[in-house]
Length: 206
Image 1 (cartoon, rainbow, N blue to C red):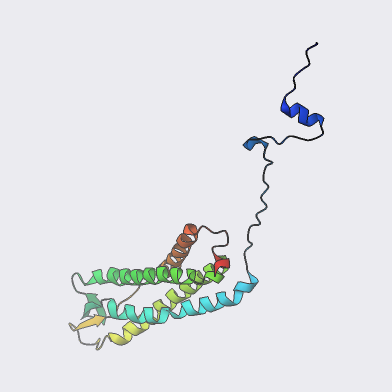
Image 2 (cartoon, rainbow, N blue to C red):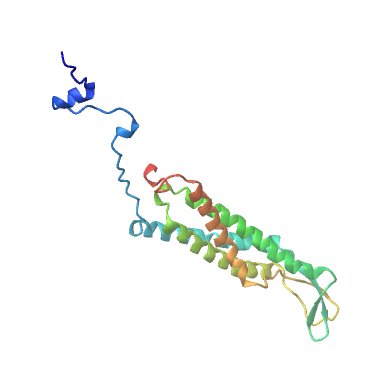
């Protein structure tokens, strides 16, 4: 009796017209993922962004008032020609005034960035820029109103009496200090966004 070729089970099944099911992870068809990235929402976030900007800007008024109370004045002496000469070591208060303003605005900027981040349904670059612009306006208002409050709190008095000791109100000798608050707000908001793991920053969960 002639030997018949012994076929494998797979070959016998294929001869009957049935395709055998291969096993193993290599046999699975590659899965295709179609994940649409969420787009930046601009038009819908414009009005909330305006509200954020105006609200944050108003924070500058109490910050200016608080700075005028915390910043130390300089004690000066009236010299010839109605000029003011600071006493020894009193000129260091010029740096103290600047440092107090920077610390206040940095703290307010960090709190602002964190508070705006809690607006989950409005998270995104539009509201972030609104918070930064509002912080810039707030710092400018704090600068202007703080100097006005300080001048009212420490009036110079009589400049005609030579040798008189007077209190010179706190001063801010650099306008670049207004950048501290918006930079702190951007830092806080950016840190929260980097920590977030959602593509839409969690907007759909709000």
